[in-house]
Amino acid sequence: MITTRFAPSPTGYLHIGGLRTSLFSWLWARKNEGQFLLRIEDTDLARNSEDAVAAILKAFDWVGMSYDGEALFQSKRFDVYAKYIEQLLEEGKAYKCYMSKDELTALREEQMAKGERTRYDGRYRDFTGTPPEGVEPVIRIKAPQEGMITFNDGVKGEINIAASEVDDFVIARAGGVPTYNFVVAIDDAQMGLTDVIRGDDHLYNTPKQLVVYEALGFKIPNFYHVAMINNEQGKKLSKRDGATDVMEYKTLGYLPEALLNFLVRLGWSHGDQEIFSVEEMIELFDPKDINKSSSNYNLDKLLWLNAHYIKNMEHDKLAELLVEYGVDIRTHEKKDLILNATKERGKTLVELASQINLILNAPTEYNAKNFKKAFKEDTPEILNTFMNLLKEAELNEVADYHKVMEAVVEQKEIGFGKIGMPLRVVLLGSMTGSGLDEIMAILGVDETIKRINRAIELINA
Image (cartoon, rainbow, N blue to C red; front, top):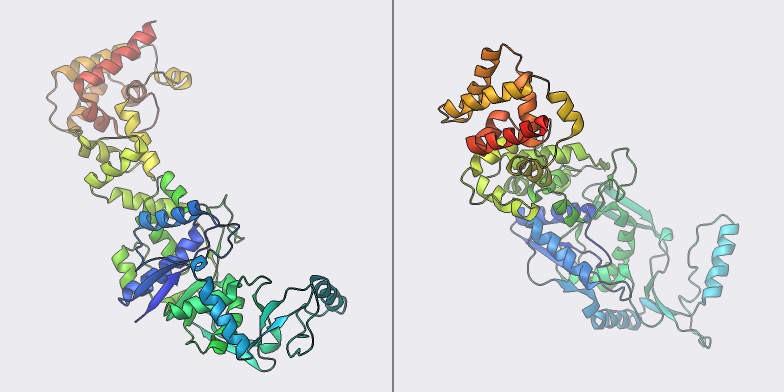
């Protein structure tokens, strides 16, 4: 059974790079009817945050990516790690290193002066003498000293690293706290992982983890190291570019469907297809198709996708979502008309809410520049003619309001802008917005006339 995982550290929010990695893992597990597991890597007790754990779980819930079973917390497994450290010591596969910090610093400076790569020189690897006093030892694992460490990466192909590149690294610090590469290998093995999909910033952790796998006799999973997401200029993605808290995307009015669709296309593709439902992602995804090269974050693409999902969402669901953005039209008798008039203009739920509020809330003030541009000497007379025709008209559908405007244009022998521009300003207080006929159909005759009269009063005043 395919088993994958996502293993965040709860020292901050879940950002989109982490969400993309977990999405790939989730899709692969779901495609194969396997398991997607969550592990919280909280061994850094000083930096852990319960709020960060809650934020990670909240983000998973928002995007609809459920994990199987209970989340595993590394902080509750120190006894497990201690048992394996003891086993390796007993088997002679690990040893106590009494090298002081001063000695380690001196070794590094000497190696740097010679132009050598800094690495531990194995001086306590086969030590049998009397331990020096006052030094609390670290535990180091015995790494292979010759040959190659080789593994096949599902994205990057065969990786070969000389054993000389991997020193006898520390698996437990002084005091017994285990290190990252040691606990990750143990947890991945004990959780039964078959496939590890993660960022390629972990690529050179893999050889160390393979040393642990081999020492403990664990089965080695398949590895897929995914290239990073860059900004639009091809440089490391920063918070300003979009590497922000996943839940911030919700605040900004993005839909989870759009965000997942956007992320799956950052580094993976299926022909020229751009729009993917979650079901299609599950059906089509294969980690072997992940690109070797980095992907560039493109905000315009995300906005385009978000607009697509907004336009194609059922109105009842859309109305429900808008409540969180200050607009409640769930029981409005013209809900469908409102959404049809505005959803083409809202790339985010924030923008959509703003467009709806622009229509439903009468303007309390008018921009002086817009007012001056739209209102000429003959404008009050044109608007009065329009109101009179509007009262007499038979208005059964949206197009009927447009016919009234056309009648004014014909009767007054004026250009359409002479009625359209001032009408837009008096109805919305803005020069932009939805179609005038749609706006009036939503407001109805009485509210339309009320807003026109208020503007005429201002002109006369």
